[in-house]
Length: 280
Image 1 (cartoon, rainbow, N blue to C red):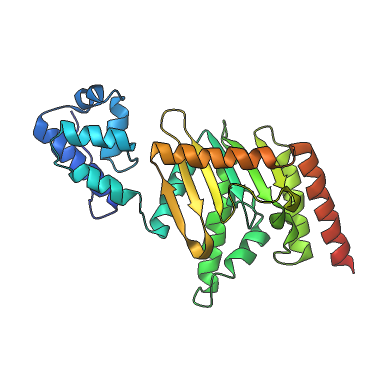
Image 2: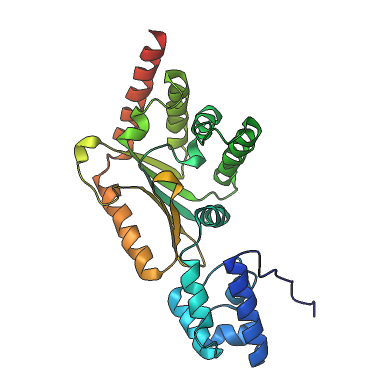
């Protein structure tokens, strides 16, 4: 039997949780399958927890804590996992994004990363601040464009995006950049597993005001929610009740948005307006 993979607990809070869980399980003398049976999960899910690749739901973490006699240590670590720093939250989001079977997003300020053109992405990155070098911008742009490969998988995820009207009105990079970006949105909206809707200003107050949100759905794992606020504030939400509340917020916004066909007409009109603007 091969030796278990080593895990550096200093790598992240998730790695620390996995290391602690493995130590407690081995101390109890249980295999991953035996522990999984006790909490009604597959042994592969326990393996994911121990490898620091996934965090359990709150109730599962509580059960593990009780079963393994952790005296609240696992529950305490789980609580800290809910307050990941922004950089770590985004890193984890990217790891989960490629595994999702469905991605539902409301974007308040800009085109979602998976649908950005290189010129649009570069304009966004160029405003990260004077302390970011051109070389760093090049790396960030390349990384953002590379993320779109998830949409070219043999079985890509369902991507359902609701764009605030501000996203198609704000001239990021000027009319030529925006015209190309709108054309790209139209092209992608015709892909079989991509839906794009526009939430017009006229819709008024809605449930997701104040930031953007993404709901990730998986075939064999609980849903996750990624929240984005101003000034780089981000959060990864795993608690099942909180995820349900945020998913409901997305559903409400989705219901208020224009249907996909009408949304395409709005994007086409915006593209034409940018083209006219560019020719003047």
